[in-house]
Image (cartoon, rainbow, N blue to C red; front, top):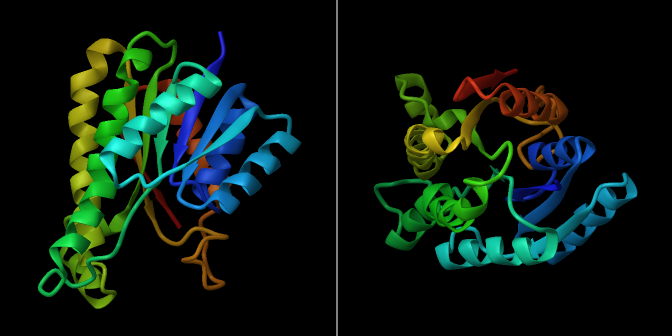
Amino acid sequence: MSKTIVVCGFGPGISTAVAEKFGREGFSVALVARRKDKLDEGVKALEAKGIRAAGFQGDLGDPARAAGTIREVRATLGNITAIQWNAYSGQAGDLTTASPEAIRADFDVATSGLIAMVQAALPDLRTADGAAILVTNGGLGKIDPGVDAMCVQWGAMGLGVANAEKAKLVGLLSEKLKGDRVYVGEITVMGSVKGTAFDSGNATIDPAAVAEKFWSLYTSRTDVRAVFAA
């Protein structure tokens, strides 16, 4: 039976590496992002490697759009086997001055869109062989005074809270869905990833290595959390 993974927040770095890894392992790949040109390039690159792929344009911070994307993927590539969530927002740099809209945007991308997509995909996930929800998270959500200082210094307070919120969601979904044989796992990346907007030339984390770790979590289906550090 064919398998489909939905890679959310597609772009250079981890999401591209995950799409390639799971595609090589026989998955059809749905790419989800805001920009059509980015999606077109990604689909073309995957198809050149012999991977069945399609792009879906949309705002993952909009729960209705996120749910609608699942319906579109199902109609195009078949039932959903896995969701891989890379989307993030960092609009609320200073939580003492940020607008309600900016704060809401950070939280909606971290959790509201993901929850909506999971709800829409649950009929497929509950019957799929090897169903999974795989989440990329960032180290700024760690509960640690030094990390808190970094969030304030870097103007990433909203992102820090959103990452912590996302980590809690992973644990809750894992507990709720384990009876349905839906694996939920998270990798927290502690550092800059090569080839991304955060790479100023000294990034040390290889996205392909992170993708291999996601595959290891997916196949072993035991550990809920892993940390990938430089």
